[in-house]
Length: 432
Image (tube, rainbow, N blue to C red; front, side, top):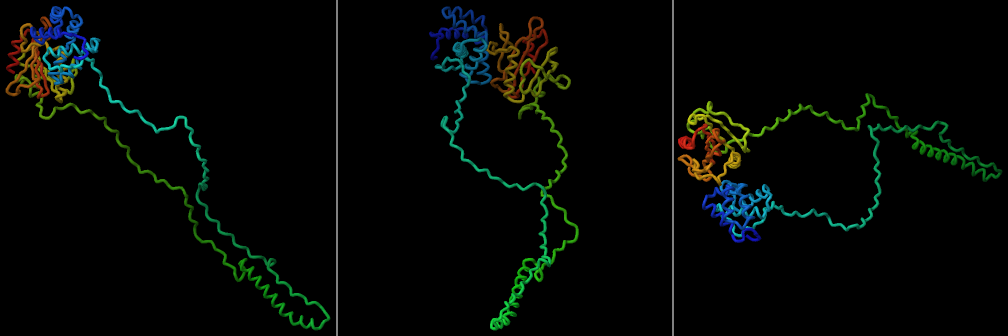
């Protein structure tokens, strides 16, 4: 590993390999036994020795096994996750956590990349985003003066209904005193000259006639302008009947149609978890000697000591073939929720597959055991296991079997009566 300052000669790796070959993988979860071994094998590497024992105390082997074997996470990612957890819980340096986690992964037989850098796990980085760009502007550049605008004065007519038009006033004809008086004919001068007198006597009638004609023309012109006879107009007469009401210029807003108020919306009730397609209901998966679930089983609704994700059905049953004992059964709504709940359950009961024996009942000297199981209904499948152990201590202890059915998103636990042995519980489990 590039940049690694731990175990330059590979002595710690050889010590772990020796421990596993001598005691099995479960030694990686036993800090007492492992501590004695590495004290003898690594007398000159106190730092590496301390890290190996700390990892055993923190359950690094169990966490790696869960990530790789149960969650099917790739080895490199599993190392990063466990190393980060170890750094947070034990306040170790990131490089130290990564080194010891990698050594444990190799001791468990996982394919670890040879050149995997021993660097502390880093949180994910998000791609840098380009800052917001604004339109380019000259700093401190004066703004061009705004062009003066001439306000436009709009003439707004006064509000209110339109007024009726006032009829034009009639032209008043002139009074007789105002009538145009024709000019008087000129008086011929009195002279003694006979010739002049004779001429005047012939012109007199002509002048009178012309004066009268001129006066008539003037009168006709005035009469035409003043609407006198014969150019007078008839006076307008008002139209009889009721005067129509004035219509307001304001638009009349129609009254809104009456609508009944909508009823308040009902609160949305979240849907209950339901079985995935093709999954058999839990009551059909119970041990065969539970004949009547209506009288032998009740609902197991919690509270639970582990986080239950997507529980569809939980049952607590009395089994006639397990007198004084109990059978618990749980079924989840999806494969993902089953995997999560199964891991939470094992963590809550303290079961560690990395240190458990390889069979049920557990081998001599082992407190826990586990193995795969199958029958004619359930062919062999990765993750289909039976686990065994003891609940409590002393006279109050009980032996227990737990088995999983991943194809049915279910798992079960049988707790035997006080005084039962693993052999008795194994016989019951094999027959049911």
